[in-house]
Length: 147
Image 1 (cartoon, rainbow, N blue to C red):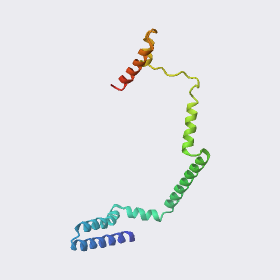
Image 2 (cartoon, helix red, strand yellow; image 1 turned 30 degrees about the vertical axis):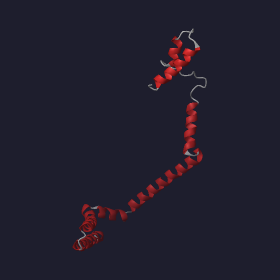
Image 3 (cartoon, rainbow, N blue to C red; image 1 turned 120 degrees about the horizontal axis):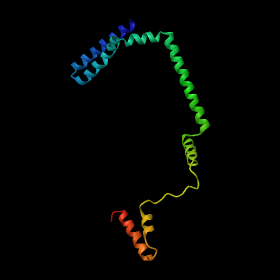
């Protein structure tokens, strides 16, 4: 009940200041002050002030805040321990990447070239002279760049 009275007084005082500000022809500032002064009375009317008052004087609510604090403390402790044990985030990522790269066989075959240069060289006759090979490589490079 006291909180509702205080909020009503604050709203009334704010509206009074808004009227004085509007009288001085500062309408934008007066409108902003009026908007701010209507917030406390709006909170009273919606029941937020009563809920806050009930929460502030409730032993169960404070116990709940204590439980939340303990949960946060445990969470932060596990984060600190995890960081000390595992090093930095970059080191942990590097260790995971190394573990993944070891999964590939070290003697894996090289990837095939597909339909590109490898198939053209395979269809070319062995009697081709060395000079033609040089120009075909240059031609392939120019075609690759769209020239």
